[in-house]
Length: 82
Image 1 (tube, one colour):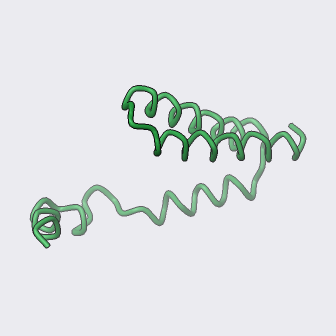
Image 2: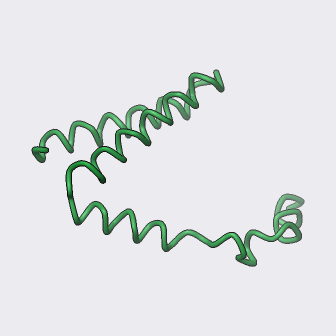
């Protein structure tokens, strides 16, 4: 896939994501966000862009794991009371 098509798909994904965040309809918002995720997945998996794949891997490794102390229910309840 040419690099300019990757840029078009990524800009479309960002537009859809932010448009879905601003929309008040939950179903339409979910559809827009799903289309944005699919667009990013096409760029990452179909284009064979190693730098983008490494960036996505870095973000995935940066996210907290499910067993993290930050995600425990006691901490979440305490933070929500503040």
